[in-house]
Length: 142
Image (cartoon, rainbow, N blue to C red):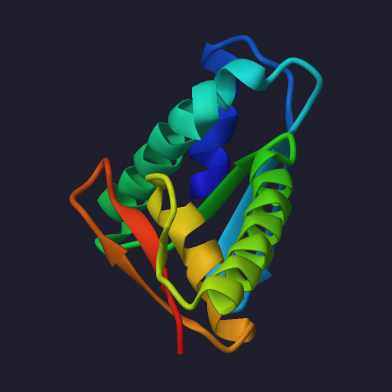
């Protein structure tokens, strides 16, 4: 259903893109790949986040069940994940050296989850604070 919705959207917008579908854990992952798709990502992934939510709503409308679908466009999320994992590693080092908590800039739910997972893998704890859309991660010393 998600693929059908996205294909129709690409047709309406007259954009060329191929869909790649996969399952990561218990979550469906759909990637749109193509040369001229930056407008589907937007500034800092804002359009991508909105498009993902619209796709989830379209699936919900058809099935009556909430979807945890993850959408990526032209590898934006994959590249962002790598950047966030690097930021998390640098922050872990900073927290261990200083012994003080470090607050990061506001992030989307996807970005916060990537950071929380990387922090946990490094053996530290983190928590989210603030209110959307200014919610951010705080990395805590042990």
